[in-house]
Image (cartoon, rainbow, N blue to C red; front, side, top):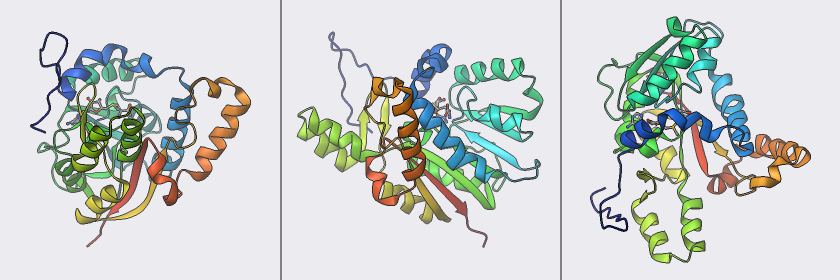
Length: 273
Ligand SMILES: C[S@@+](CC[C@H](N)C(=O)[O-])C[C@H]1O[C@@H](n2cnc3c(N)ncnc32)[C@H](O)[C@@H]1O
């Protein structure tokens, strides 16, 4: 993390922290994803394959949505009647969430807590019956390995933990296609790169290993998106969209395809003993 050197035209250091970037962009964050067909596919996979099946039937399960941002997943879970703790490092993202929750009269079911996923001291060990960390907070934090340990620490024994991250291999391929073999080699070596802010890219096998070493058994990996990456405008065609969605939902958990997915989600369970 220390050897980043990104300079603008004036030679000024341009790197923002992830918190600074999200604070800056919070007010237009939701709009930036609206109407995008690949996002519609990503969201269907997220809800149908990694969230809804892992919510308990009884509503007394307490849920942590870590890095929950403007409440995209907190809101549907609260609508279903669960109590959700929405935690995020960006207070501005949380402010946007609060406005949305107020509009839906859901504030009584949600605790909003500013928190860094790498240090969630405000939550005791084994506090939550379901822990979600969706949309790359682990890739955006300063210490993804510590973030994983924290997610597992606050989960109750036997409960499900779901986290999605940026996948290393498509990013490496992208660098190679841009003609930058040096960058690709460096990425494979240290997994960090700087886009809007520093980001950590996981190998699928590394994600599995780290959750296992932190005391979990892994149920599955889920790839998002595999077939629709880079399809852009083609997905606007309703027939192509339907076919692609069917493919994505059908093959997203095939372990042999995991290296191709832009994002990988892990669904795992904290061991009981
Ligand atoms: C791409 S957004 C996803 C938000 C939400 N989970 C969703 O799916 O819409 C990533 C979120 O991670 C948050 N984040 C980044 N670094 C974090 C950290 N160290 N601890 C907690 N949240 C963090 C950002 O503020 C942002 O809200």
